Length: 249
Ligand code: NAP
Image 1 (spheres, helix red, strand yellow):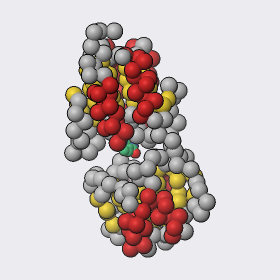
Image 2: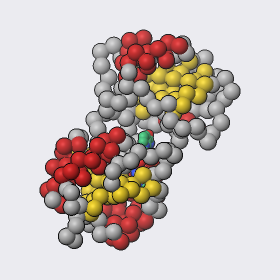
Image 3: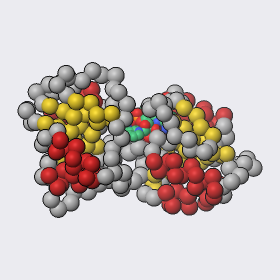
């Protein structure tokens, strides 16, 4: 390892923002590079060196790790960013770079919930009953799996406008998920929503919609997480910090 430890933080989540700050404080001498896919146009300032855009697959990432003498990769991407997480494991294997993946625990069904689980977006899209009024809490990259369902009304919420055109009678709601249960309940009520489609992202920041659905008795079509290749996993930011300090501190 070089004198200055070098950490690559694969970002794109709220946890990555916190981690960047905490890593900087815990390892002031380290070079920390946060990496974004560039999926959204306004990126948060993580207060560390930042790069934007893909690496060019696992091989491209392996080359990046070697060129930049990276000592540790922290995969703090979203649980559904399966391609990036898979590439990270492969690239770290090729270059023998230590890796830790931050995996927030998935949401679990609670009393009063009516969940149906689906392996992927397409399966959930097929399961929405004809004539339903669905709230699609999926991303702009995912919405194309649903747009053929012109037999339902959908309120589609995402952060940025999708490339895919939506059926004319659907409503696009450009916003981040709210963490306020009252706001999420009001949104569901206002649009007469009778089915909620969500990805099992986990974490407290986007769970208010699930509480709203529980309150209103709205069934949830829950998309299970994609499977990821085995890697050392932490479920909290603190665990990642401990691992990082042990690896490069
Ligand atoms: P993905 O399908 O796993 O990745 C597609 C490609 O985008 C990757 O192969 C990689 O390109 C590039 N990429 C992804 N994350 C990157 C990162 N942090 N830094 C540099 N390149 C990255 O990922 P995704 O689902 O499109 O998500 C993209 C970003 O949005 C991720 O950072 C993720 O954390 C964030 N995000 C995703 C979701 C979601 O539901 N999927 C939700 C919230 C936030 P190359 O192969 O060229 O390296």
